[in-house]
Image (cartoon, rainbow, N blue to C red; front, side):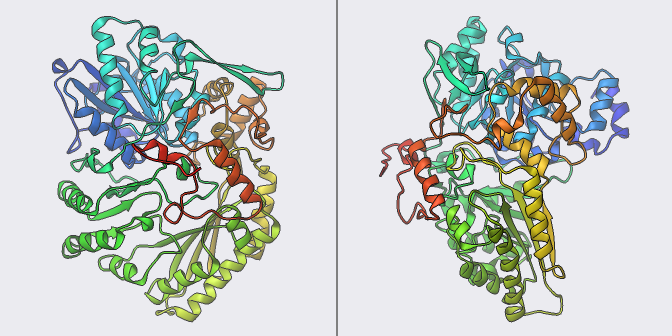
Amino acid sequence: MNNKLERILPNVQKPARYVGGEYGQTVKDKASVDLRVAFCFPDTYEIGMSNLGMRILYAVMNQMDGVWCERVFAPWADMEEAMIQNDIPLYALESGDPISDFDMIAFTIGYEMSYTNVLNMLRLGNIPLHASERKGLSQMVFAGGACMYNPEPLADFVDFFCIGEGEEMTPEILNLYRKAKREGWTKDAFLCEVCKIEGVYVPSLYEHIYGDQGELLEIRVKEGAPKQIRKRIIQNLDTALYPTEGIVPNLEIVHDRSNLEVMRGCIRGCRFCQAGFTYRPVRPRSPKLLQKQAVEALEFSGCHEITLSSLSTSDYYALEELAGGMLDYCTPRKISLSLPSLRADNFSRELMLKLQQVKKSGLTFAPEAGTQRLRDAINKNVTEEEILHTCAIAFSGGWNSVKLYFMLGLPTETDEDVLGIADLVYKIYQTWRENASNKKRGVRIHVATAFFVPKPFTPFQWEKQITPEEYLRRTKLLKANMPAKFVEYKYHEADLSRLEAVLARGDRRLGAVLEEAVNRGCRLDAWDEYFNYSAWCEAFDCCKIDPDHYTVRGFEEGELLPWQTISDGVSTAFLSRERKKAYASETTADCRSQCAGCGANCLLEGGKCNA
């Protein structure tokens, strides 16, 4: 640690964010490596260290001989100011070296509102902002993560993108880079070769042509580049690396526990859920392997809580077996087992009793809509009867609190659907009165509503987003009709969700807006303390770009979409069919009951599609 850093750390919040030295981190001899990667998470230490994908890829890269991957996180505003005042560039935690010293700079991006952090971190690291300004092989910037199914808003700044899962793709990229470095390739030569790796998208090899109204008219593919980039997946998760000897953080993080990934993909087909489509097909890990990994991770980390992670954990095919085996280990050691992503249609009393053996964690369910018609339109595939039955099980088992998540602004939603949320909440209260085993404590029902954001690669990717004013009208209507005594109601901010929709469905023209927003001080936008909507509006005005072009306008089904160069394996024809079924309030069965022919099975070796 340098003297400047030693002086400023006592004066900033949570200095442990910035010092490294954690148990389990990887430190290598610089002289023994020929490739150094600065692995950046565009948010704070507490958020980044809770990200399982970052932990996995950190282990994948450091497992390679001759490669050293180090972590970099976005500083909080007080630390950023101190770094600027003391001329300390953004640095990696393991070595303390500035990121400008690294060969490659990688970002994992899971949320659109972190885009300004990407640009700000490059600037803090003295890295030229635009990909076109970085001429040689050094300081090569690439990015992956859940948001990169539409990477176009960042196309001006990132040299190439990784689409899909990175465990196999990343070593292929790094080894190609090492070859290019040894043989003295130009940057252009490397980009022309790396685009041949399945899952790699090089935006400079594609020219986007726009019309007078800002509509995308044509995508011109340069010679040698693939016409479409298909996402990369891991065929068998049992053979994929899982870091049981992970880094133990210096301070409490958001998800301060061991995290066990039980499967990827989701058997459901909720029509608003991007992850439910982009992570297809479903691939589970075996329960025997998961129990082994759980014990190894807990013994290494010393954590007293472990969570079973996936998009829909209660749909894991061997959940009862896995939970039973893990509790045999966890219960005598006072280690609690938690299951997020529970479904209201498959929550059993037996599972509930197992979960509360050590610690009774909260229950969270997401009905998403208040009426059965709208739940069918979004293909939630859960009934009011199932929701109330699940709550009855929980209340009779001693729970007196439940969290419920809904969305407002879903396609086809009416005021009747909004009022249906209040009606359902009241019925849940009545269920508590009829079934609670402990009424002395009273009941608390926590209700949250989010502003629907149409996302690429979903049946709703073409939909209009309602205006923030209309969203707020619906929140007021709901609040006025919500049973107030026993309900805590919160709703997401409208401005933030509007901007999220712009960035989610945006095109390359937004690069100028992002840069202007950063110039106006925008960063840490996901944090209420720093989100500056007026600065964003000024940036759009300055660049003469109307945000409504990406939100309330919607898209025609025949329109060329900015993300059309990317394929997640799910066919556009399937998404269109699902959209039509949504408007007819028709449901589609889950993948285990019947294959709907989405196309994702073709990504598996020998996989077939029933389309």
